[in-house]
Image (cartoon, rainbow, N blue to C red; front, side):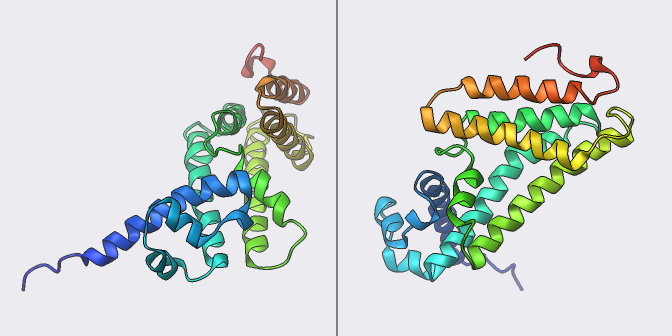
Length: 214
């Protein structure tokens, strides 16, 4: 028997799904997940409305798929570069740099996708809220684990409150994002970099492990 050939319809469906989701994450980052519409996306991309509806079935399924796509993009731009550095303070610094670059370079047109959409769904109930909450929890856990690695290696003071430090670093980064998106400027990223460096200098065991200045 010859090898089974891939079903062309399935392949086309996958390509169409990727095309729709690539547009959806950008729309959601500026207009929110509630701003998504299967019909609108089909029209903008010049696709069959019935075909797009068949791929997702409902607005909620489109929203959930959009969140998953945004997570994958975030992993590529922030987590993967961070993990490429050995555990320790170098990895902590790469994590912060990668996040600020991800926001500053507008990987998503509206800045951080999750900053925007979590604010939209934080007081709601349902699957989309739960997906965003799980994503936020995963990010906070990643930051805490990255800091804990540095503490265990002796590069952060033994009594460092890792949970509090993670909270503060995330706050610095998110405020830079918010200020930049609101005012369409970049000074907030320099302020955040200085704030992060200042906070880390207060807990590092060897200041030489950090950049000299922002």
